[in-house]
Image 1 (tube, helix red, strand yellow):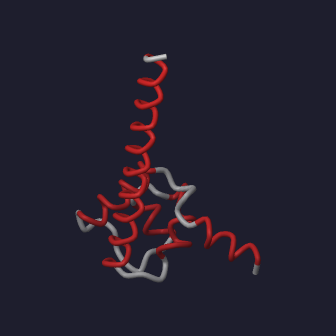
Image 2 (cartoon, rainbow, N blue to C red; image 1 turned 90 degrees about the horizontal axis):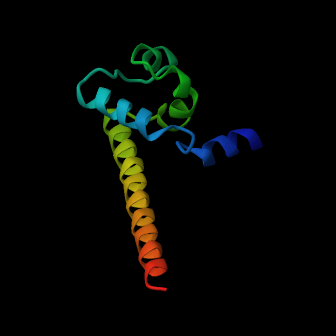
Length: 97
C-alpha cells in the first residue's frame, strides 16, 4: 500500500517534458485512444514512461488527460522561467559587485 501511495505522490515527475509534450501532441492530433493502456502508449512511442503516465492518467478520459498534461507542462514552463529570472538576477548581481 505504501508503494502505491508513493507512486501516486510522484505523479508525472519522472516523465520528461519531451515525453509529456509528445503525449499532448498525440492527444491533440487524435492519435491517442482512450482508455489508455500500455499498448496504446507503446504504439505512439511512450513505452519507457508508460507506467508513470498510466499511474496518473489511467482513470481519466481524453478531456481529463488534456487538462493534466497542459497543467503539468504549464507548471514546468513557469518553473523554467523563474529559474532563468533568478539566474539572470544572480548574474547581474555578481557583475555589480
